[in-house]
Length: 435
Ligand SMILES: [Zn+2]
Image (cartoon, rainbow, N blue to C red; front, side, top):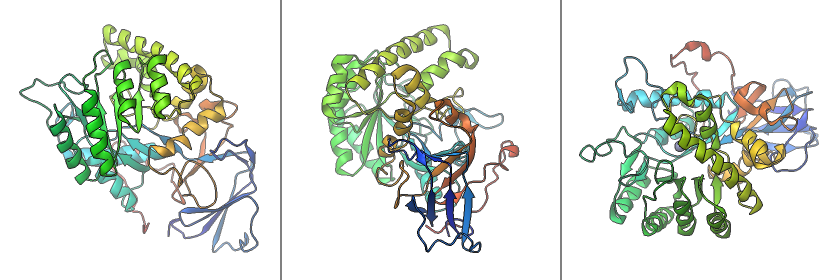
């Protein structure tokens, strides 16, 4: 019984933005049975609204109905922020504690209207376990598609320890300095059930740390095992090489110029700029220990990303939305998941409708559910949000869950209150879902 009470949900009235890019329409009725949308549009005669034992009617008058948001780039298990009395190095060193906290992070994300999440990297295989626990109905949270630890070389992002320390399990990268080591790591991660592999080049893109033949080898091995591949690539050369290697999507691409973007367009590879992190770091980074040199670098990458975003749009590259929430103490959960569509509108020349499509229909690709989520139509999974204000009039309406009236995930109405006052306690309601 997906609705908890097992009733058919019928959402009537309001304005429907279905995620496909079609113009908004007046909503007649959305009928949800179990965890799927049965129909959108006219009510069929067999749905008897007066049958309150079996039907729950939701009146959406003066509200806007949309697919649940998808954040294509959010980390749940990095272990930020560090907490008093919890042993930590770069993030917590206790996998059990980290897993429990990741579960709570996922609940916060869901209550911001995010019903699916791609998690490009974390500690241990916590995100795999959390994904499976949510799917099994043990915990409430968004649908998750995840990677394991980033595959990196000496000099890549996350290679922060001296070489004699390497990359311990509680860090979010794993060193692999040649093709053989990379392939072994891909196989190990696939054995543990990751949905995709995350490679990572240099932190800000100034050097290229992974060779083209290494990228190609990882893509081949992962694809053979039905796992997809993405890469942290801020540099121009690494972005070009990633596109040529057949990466499924590329994260960042800050310093890519028109020359590299043409290669990306030619290869049909999607881009997820994830500019929310850069923007937020420029705004608040100084409060979180980011020094002036680093902030200058971030500003440089932001300026370059704005140009890149315009050029990518002109070249017809499909843009995906990610925020990097949870990547560091300055990126909290639940607040920034809809900032990226606002950046697309303000800096990329996108219409609000195009930005909504980017974080719903287009982003369904990154969670591997292209035909299941992201658009509200008959047969799809019932993940939707109800808003008190019009996101087409102001895309920022989507931010921080501030105008959310309701979140439905997998056909179940999410309890939006009642958890935040637990202040760090883990208060999970037992779910009755049978999947
Ligand atoms: Zn990230």
